[in-house]
Length: 253
Length: 322
Figure 1 (cartoon, rainbow over the protein chains, first blue to last red):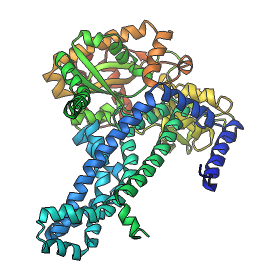
Figure 2: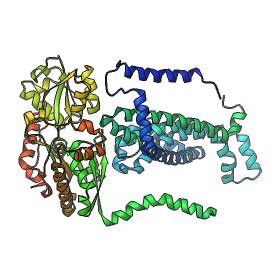
Figure 3: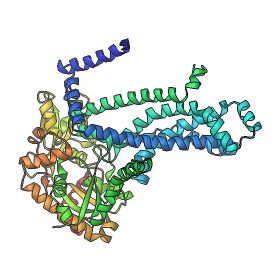
Figure 4: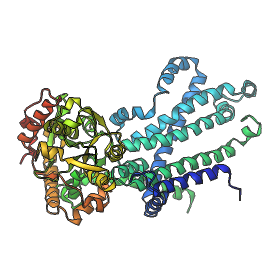
């Protein structure tokens, strides 16, 4: 087993500080419960199946959105690369829309898409779309012209060049965009759930806040922290497996 | 199991939950209602649980929004057939030209204390009336709603000039901490947050008034609202809703203070039963009167929310009348 790092001890120390500060009454509010109470609530609602269900539904929406946003982002990125006209026409719009904080566009999306899965998946998709698009466009510039020229010389048709040369070459860039998108999509999906509808971890968090049940509310926060961490670790593992060759050539550093 | 049949089995399993609601919807008319998880919507949940809506051939799909204000905009956009909303917010929409109609009654303030809304201050601050709140920070959960309006009316009634009060917005769950911590000087609380605040900070906070009861006893607090066009075109659906809801109201009124009711409320709001036991409730009513709507409009006009309103008789759809 790997030895615990100093970072791990810091987390333990902070959690201990949480427990002590609540127990000793340094923070005098029912909205600051001891960590042990939070963990008890977490255990209870996990055993009852409520939290696993909520996490599952939140993740399902997030991944559906990520998939849609990634496909759209790659497609649009390829279009930008293939057609300078498209890049000129659509580029300014993309640059204008990209910096808008996603939570700010939730109210109009509620108007057009309602309060259920459609709206929340769209939120996650829009979140994923922009980082994937910019990274795809950047990746295209890094595709080696020699490889493309060689494929052309050997008479590989254009659509096969796309799948055999271009897409594998830009995969590391797409994945880098996706990793950014993954962290953001969890945030925006949960925010969308907090604002509207009766779904997922986000709704649970707000409901518990309004019910004055701080233990359950922090349990949801802990779940989200663990989820974000696990998603990132899982993604790094996947990345190593998918594009080991990229790291092997030493291009990541 | 072959690959194809396994795939088909998985596909069928995934598709089942998607197909099930549409099959059920053929049997019952589905109505989507925006609610907030407060004590005031107990009759709706009672009617759902005890099948009063199903008996009327309708199925209620509640969409709870704890913090945000998606209710009325959602009705305008057609996401909801109805929204549970406080009277002031609905009337402000009407003033802006939105064709809202009160289609079913919900709650009024208490004729006698204790009432479900209270103004709290820090112990030892010496503040007991509106005059002393001039220049001070007074929190309501949202501006320009029933809480804010009655809070301003209470300040006016107890000798203060409401325009000189620094009104700030603080969500109910954070109000007690903000008051105990000194970020605000008074808070306009609603149950169960009154009880929660006094339980958690009883040594620091005290109640100085029931601001709705003291300015307008037995006055309008909240109703169910729909669009006029929908109500007129589908009047029969709203009649069935109102009938089912009235039975839910009876169920609740027969069990005031009883464990059955507290468990029902705890079930949808997730507020612990022990806290609900100490909460003051609103009055669950079975009609909306022209007089109560006229009174709210008059009070709104006095506190800067006036404008051109249709006659109250036009705003109350027949399903909400006695």
